[in-house]
Amino acid sequence: MKLTGKRTRLSAAIAAVTVAALSLTACAGGGQSASGTAAGGDSGTLSAWVWPGAMGEDVMSAATTQFASDKLEFNTIGDNFKQKLVTVFTGKSGVPSITGVKGEDMPYFRQQGELFTDLKTLGVDDILAQYPSWKLAEATTADGKLIGLPMDIGPTGLFYRTDVLAQAGLPTDPAEVAAQTSTWEDYFAFGEKLKAATGAFISVSIDDVFTKVMGQSTSGIVGPNGEFQGDSETVKKAWDLSVEAYQRGLVANLVDESPDWASAVSSGKIPTVIGAAWHAGDIKGAVPDTSGKWAVTTTPGGPANIGGSFLTIPAGTANTAEAIKVIRYLLDPKNQAITYTQVGNFPSNAQTLNEPQLKEGDAFFGGQVTAPVFEKAVESMPTKVTSPYESEASAPYTTELINVATQGKDPQQAWTDAVAASKQALAAAQ
Image 1 (tube, helix red, strand yellow):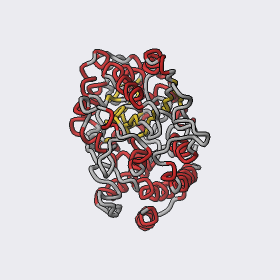
Image 2 (cartoon, rainbow, N blue to C red):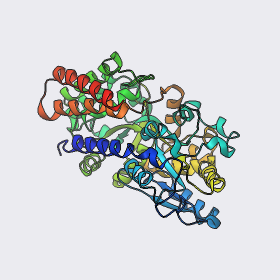
Image 3 (cartoon, rainbow, N blue to C red):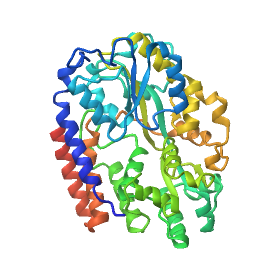
Image 4 (cartoon, rainbow, N blue to C red):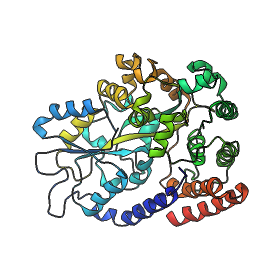
């Protein structure tokens, strides 16, 4: 039940990706396998890589039928999607014709733009206005190539169990919950009442608070020109709120989305979850037995912007004309609406908001129409183009916060160590 192994796994993943990156440029522009097979498999076929929950199953099934003559096949890749994509690029074998790229991984792949097709060369000008300009900027390289079209964006909300809040004598109506949790301090006070009545926690881990507060900011640990800003007021505020949540006994000290997390959410030990719209799919998949007991409202402290993903075409794809047709189909407003209802991914295409599915209640959320919560969040959520070095620079803060929570390390010393380690990590990455 303790937060174990996260630091080790994160460090290992970063190290592995860094090593692989050294040789990525060697396969740039080729996209050929060792045997000379074009990206996407045998001639006349299209393959698409996605991760679990990347899009609705019905959408993928319909696309397979729609593009039967292209022998379109989807491969759902679990675990570390980025690492596996880096592996096939590096090995020049098994590169898919179309691949998803997660939002947090796009800063890395944006630096490897030669691995992807410039989608602006495939006649997409007529649809670009349908997507947020800031999201398109996230997939635009320094030399102006557009390497991805957005699948979804990441406005956040506060998901909560109505049955547990009712047991604690707290409000359950979304508007009333929002009124009592409008700031982080309000949310912490709300959490203390919840814990006193039920023993439940409002955060899975100490670093989870840090991530969400940073997601509410327009700046990161690394500035737009690669400068270090990990000792800024923004980062210190995120740090202090994380430590405060821990010191007030509101943190469960579990690994997010682990079996222990699912067990805690199912039992009501963690009845509140702050996450992007796509987190609804994670909750539904992890604790289906709690269907009908959930609701969602606005995020304490204001909306954050977390995640959101893209569809791309690797540079070696032979039939780019058909590949872009597939992407257009998958991102059609009607199909984005189906994806939202099936896995919760909030549409990147503004026209999707007019689809009837987004105006229907969700049985898992007690019949609540959830889309307006995230639609309102989009109006004021912060946007920023994340540095390709943000992941390396932010890892020390996670490490040191975990040290505070699991080893009793002095928070001030941990902050000092995190800032120093982050500076070193950024310098090494650059």
